Image (cartoon, rainbow, N blue to C red; front, side):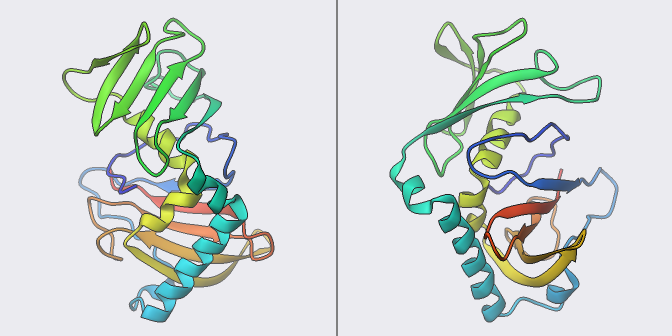
Length: 221
């Protein structure tokens, strides 16, 4: 997803697809944009580096069951999000919820609260528009959009299969992290250089299992 929203450090214990540690490097107003491009590709991305990067992502997707994923139209998961800040953005904290991805490969989803004062209600996103869920109905949300969590949680749920949507991809070479060797893939949109619209990602892939285990994200918000 060409994510142009900043997000906080909720507990990303989402099941189903991938579980990896992510460090987020946000940029606040007035600060110079962070740049997490590995040194190996700061001089430019060759066609060969792009091809290797996309091949690494494809290998990871195959490990997670890409062909089975393509056959599914929807999927869902449950998780609990707990924020260690006063304003979590949820009706209650910690917030348990179920997210139903209505169309895999897209942002449309229903997010239903499973605890707290709004249990049984929720938020939704469909066709780029945001809704409240009440009494089993979608009610268009007026005013500023407070429901970015729907798209963000859905994005992370589908991350291994959707990160290849990035228009800029490159093999960033091997790296050792905490005593373990990884293959690295850099991914972003529009330009390899940091820009105020789209996120940058560095994905760490275990070369043996082909699992995405770690990652770094530069937030554009």
